[in-house]
Image (cartoon, rainbow, N blue to C red):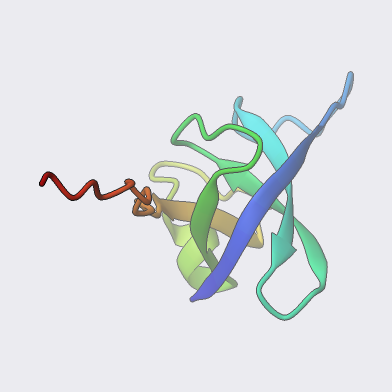
Length: 88
């Protein structure tokens, strides 16, 4: 699995028929690279995600062979820092 962060959407007015409908997102990986991943979850810009690649990604789609090499499989919940206050 690859950890990354959504940095944008990729818009395509035409695609092959085997491609499922859904969003293609640009991801910045934890290693500093970028990749395009199919998003079945509805992730937003800035969101931390987990991605799988290869046959596991393509195998997600039942009933047809989809030309997908990278698939977002999870949205990472991130902790928010809260300010502690000391009451005297």
